[in-house]
Each structure stands twice: as C-alpha cells, then as structure tokens.
Length: 476
Image 1 (cartoon, rainbow, N blue to C red):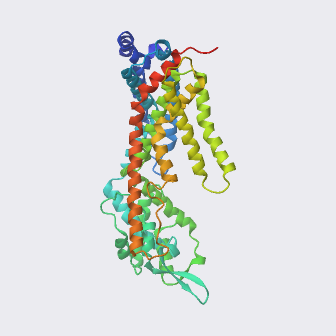
Image 2 (image 1 turned 90 degrees about the vertical axis):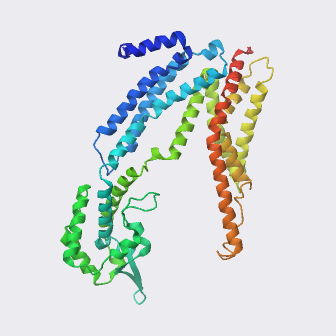
Image 3 (image 1 turned 135 degrees about the vertical axis):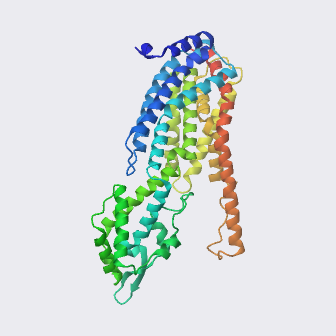
C-alpha cells in the first residue's frame, strides 16, 4: 500500500540509488526529504488556515502536536535505517562515509523534529499582521493616555502620602508616580525594539491632565472602549460611568485600604497582554527566533544522531547498559554527595566525580586503540560513554573551572559594603567583575560553538574504534 502511495519519480530514484549509491539508499534520505517536505507544507497550511487567536495563541499546543508526529516518523525511519547495517556486516571505516552518514542522519532527524517551525512562523506573522504598525501605535498611545483616568490601582499609579495622625495612606490623583508609569504602560519599552511613535513615559506624564473637562473625558473613554472592543475585550461599564467615577475620586483623598479594583486591574492586565502579544509577534520575540532555542535543537539533533549511529555500531544490549549508566551514575553521585558532605559545596564533589568518570572513559578509548586480542565488553561500554558525552565535554570543563577555581576571577572581593560606590576600590571591583564576566561569556560562546565541530572531527576515530571492537574474537 505504501508503495502505491509513493510517487513514480521517487520509486525510480530509489532504484537508482540502490544500484549506484548504496550509502544514500540505506539512509532513505530521498524518502525522508519527500515526507519531511509534505509534513512542513501541512504544518505551514495549518498555520495559514487556523483562525487567529491573539488572546491565547496556540503556539505550544501545535508545537507539541507536530513534534509528536515527527517523533513517530523518526521511530519508523530509525527502524528502517538500522535494519540494513553495513557497519556490522562489512566493517566500513572510511572517514568520508562516516561524515556523509552523519550528515544524512542529522538532516533526516531535522526534517522530522523541526516540523513545527513552519506553523509557528506562519501563525506568528498572521498575529503580527492583525494590526498595522500605525494602527497599533495609535491604539497603544490611546490606551496609555486613558489608563490613569480609569484609576485601576490608584495607590500604585499615583503619588501616595501618609497621614500620621490616623496612620493611613492615600493617593493624590493630581500627580502620577513617575517610577510606575513605565510599568503600567500597555507595552514595555525594554524589549530592545520600539515601535516608532509610542509616547514615552515623560510624554505620558506631561499629557496627563487631572482637571480635564467631563465631556472631554467621556469622549476619551468612549474612544478607548471602542478600540478595546476591536480586540475582543468588553468593559462592564460605559464611558460616562468611568468619567463620573474619576471626577468623583479626583477631588478627594483615595485611601489605599478602601480601594477595591481587582476586577478592573484584571481587565487592564488582559488588554495589556493582548498588546504585548501583537508586539512580540511584530518584533519576532517568539521562542523560535531566539538563539537559545536553536542551540538547544542543534545539540539535541547532534545527540540523537550520535545515538542512532552508535546503535548501528555496538550490540544493542551494551547500548542499553550504557544508557542506564549515563542516567543513574549522576543520580547516585548526587545522592552520595548529599550523604557524605553534610556541610559545604556539594557541587565540588559532584563535578569532581563526573570528571573522574569521564577521564576514565577517555583512558579506556586510548587503551582500546592498542593491540587488543579479545573483545572487552566493559571497555566497549566506557568507550560508548566517552562517545556520547564527548559533545558536552567543553561545556562541562568550562562549568567546572568556573565553579571550582578562580580562573575567571568570579570570586573577586566586592567593596560596596565597606566603601562608597564612588570610591576607587568600588570602581576597580566593578570594572574587573564586568571584565571577567565578559571573558567568561566569550569562552562559553567558544565552547558552545566549538564543541559540535570538535565532536564531528572525531567521528571517524570512534567509528574505527567500534568497528574494530566488532571484529575482535570474544571469550566464551
């Protein structure tokens, strides 16, 4: 049935690769690219056809759904990929074949596991296009200008005074609190990007008029409520009611212990969330546009690719034992650290134990390169541990040095407690702390980007090592 659903050109390509390029045929890269392309088109179509919901965008739900579909397709492909094993049958050890095989595996995994990206990208653009930049700026300015007159939370928005005779605090609606205006604006200004034309905090304060006329205030409220309804938010009262409420409050002291505006605060928060959702979409603030997400996916794909290739080169029982060791050894070491070291830094014990374990696995690799006469099961398991963890060695080493040594001077003395901030020692401490923090970031960036290159460079070495172990005689 699946053969009938396969296009004719793909069947001809399959036969051609089988006869001329068996390595490509074994990887089923042509089928993976075709299936992945269809899945990506389906993902993009869902993002383009689903109704736009700016109140609660379904990014997480659909990302999980397409990831689940990708995992199912990945499991099917891994089963087919490992069913024809050239490593165990013929002992292929050429470096070019290993690099090509690795590229084919990581591309296949990427086609399936990155299937949610078209949906997220298309849907994010549709959210961003719900309002033009000009209209969005106009609405944000309108909501920000109207917000103080709602007096949602007077004791947080306006200046507060204390009556010592009765020990009560009250808000004076004539003066906005300069420190809180930015927080209660409908869009934060510290995202790194700003829409041109959004009024600044100082402009909002200067435009606030506590003596505004009732008819002008009612008109301002009506415009605000009309625009809020365009976003699906309906206020329970009318413009005249809100105007009358503010006029009654501005002429007297508003005691903080008498304010009950939780429902109105919730309405303001909901409208603020809608504004931020659209602005985040326009400024590409979704997680798929962040570097941390791509680094995570890169390391995930590299790790899964290493596991798939390892499954073809070692006995599956040993691979299970290796997985159990990699999972439970850190847990046991952490528990021992809690039991042995009751006081002090348990991380030193934990990190030292991990590095001794990894160092022994590296020693096992060098030992296996010698003239071995028999297959060593325990040594082969340690080789697998070194192979799986090798991708993370630069990051682990950097973290160990940062936490347990003063190489990056992260334990510099701080003089702020004993000296004034303007003193020479305080300035020197601040300068050196910033300098070494920058140095650590640079080394961390080098480790994050250099570790995959180092791991790919040693792939043929591990391939030769595991194939050699397969060819050694075993003790009965």
